[in-house]
Image 1 (cartoon, chains in turn green, cyan):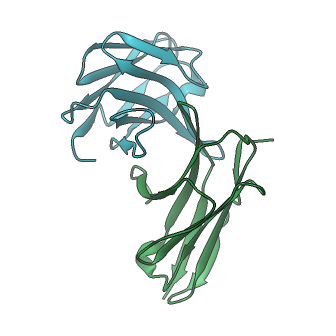
Image 2: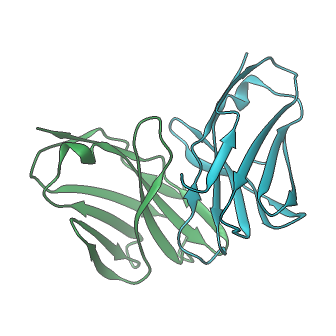
Length: 109
Length: 113
């Protein structure tokens, strides 16, 4: 079992819809949870992070964390074609950051 | 990518040759990391550094060595490159391991023939 699992996609949504990206992790000692966006051929860039159970909102993005279920998700509201990218889930355990393989999102105009 | 550069950006080499990749930062961050990214595996940590001359192994360190003689530079060396080391290599920096943002460099595409 991979430490951080994501559906590789591709996930396709129409412009203006809500995109829902999911991630599960195996280590119950995981402390912090991150979502990165990576455009093709570019480096990852941080979208947001979350520590505590519940929701955290930042503009069109909402991260949701459920530690009991070892599940973290990212919702993108009003999806735009510019949101088309690969989204990486990452989990910090002590000093180690473990990344999922990413979910490729395509937003169709 | 601001404040972090990687060189070279692209490299083609032959099996068995040594290769050194350089990461340079202007942010004065203490922590630096080398990752490799391969399809289906995501980013995997190779080595990291928590200060000048202080380094430690990551998840996939076999076949790689690192050095950090100055705060701003972190070198990754493949002593004898193999085809399995064909990958995209990213350097990242952070102020501390508990600091939540790792900033990534632009990456180096390495092809080992």
